Structure formats: structure tokens, C-alpha cells
Image (tube, helix red, strand yellow):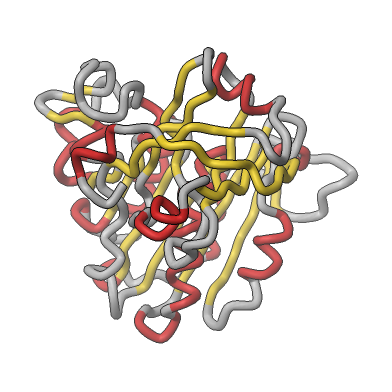
Length: 279
């Protein structure tokens, strides 16, 4: 998998564990069958891979494990289609086929020395998880960090255990909100953009990264702009529009770009005039 031309070849990986995040989302920890594949597989936070089930098909899914972890990879899936539905019923020891990784991730090296705002909605949180783990591992290389996460309701929240660990990171503030109040939730209620009022952001020194439903990212982008964050410092993950993963099917094209090969992470400044299909 180290050679680019070999990245088109799916290879088998065994499921090490399955964690139920909620009724519709599970996190799978996988290890490649081949030691060589385990050793050679590397990715940048924000990249994705194609995950397949024999006889069913494959789907693009962002990798949510730490990029510095080489013993396993993790993906969080929501039961939505044939492939994710089939994976949802799999268990420890079953085989999943993987090819990749593909696409452009978040430019974390370029962001060193700056404050970071991460904004996620729903199943858009997992693609940002490896970003948070990277920032935590290299904490002194970045400024202040805010993690904002919104879900429809308490039952839709994911990464609850992982979030508790992240809240202990120095100078990292994590804010979570749900749209529908309930007796099980005593935190913030409202849209994820409602959390912006709790931020003390210097727009000139801040980089923002977001992933979630298109309509959410539209209003997140407007809110980030109001904070003074520049368009080229706002990074959006558009992975939801991908299908083949290698720029052949044309399903994810925006203008002359393909989300799967030119993205899925884009600067807002480079795509803001081509976003009709996104929102």
C-alpha cells in the first residue's frame, strides 16, 4: 500500500473490536492481515479510505484513529446504505476490504503556532477526531484550541469516552450542544453555531476546520467569517459527496474539482464560488 499504484488494490483487514456509539453509529477497529500493509499504511488527518464488504460493495469513510498509530485503524460508520448496513452487522474477527488512503487532509503543519477552532456536526465529528489527537500529541506547537460539537439529541452523541479524555488537554476548550433538550442532558441546547458566543477568538491568528452536514457548514462558515477568520483559513471537509474515491465516476465533481482527489478538505476561499451543489 506504500506505492500509489498499489493504493487502488483492496487488501483485507480483520475487525479487532466494535464499539457501539449509539443506535445508528459504530466504531470499528481494524488491523490489516498483512504485516507489510500494517507497516506501510499511513494517512493525514482528514483523509479517507474505501471500505468494502465482499459481495456487497464499498464506501468512502474517513479514518478517525490517531494518524501516529500504526497497529490499527479506526472508522466510525452510520448505518445508512448497503455497505454500511452490512458492516453494521459485522463482528470481531470478520474481514473488511480496504483500499487507500485517498484525498487531501487538513494541513496541520501549516497551522503550527496558530489558534485552532474545530466545528463538527453529527457524524462529521469522527473525521475531526484524528485532528484532535494530532493536536494533543503536538500540543506545544499550536495555540489555543476550541472543539465545538453539535448533535440532534443526546442519543446521537458519539465519542463520549474519547471526549472526556480530550477535555483534559491543556488549553483546549470543548463545547457540546444538542438541538433537542431531554432529561438525560444538562448541557447546552441549540445549534452548534450558538456555541460561537462562548469563544474569545482573534480572527487574524486563528484557523478553523469543520465537517458536518452541508447546511451546517454553510452557517458555520458565515459565523467564522464574522469572527474575522479569513476565507483561506477556513477548511471544510466535503467527504459526504464522494462515491468512487479516485476521481473516475464524476459524482463528487464541483466545477473542475473532484472532492475525492482534490479534497475532501478544501480551503473555503478556493471553492466558495463553486458551492452551488454543496449548499
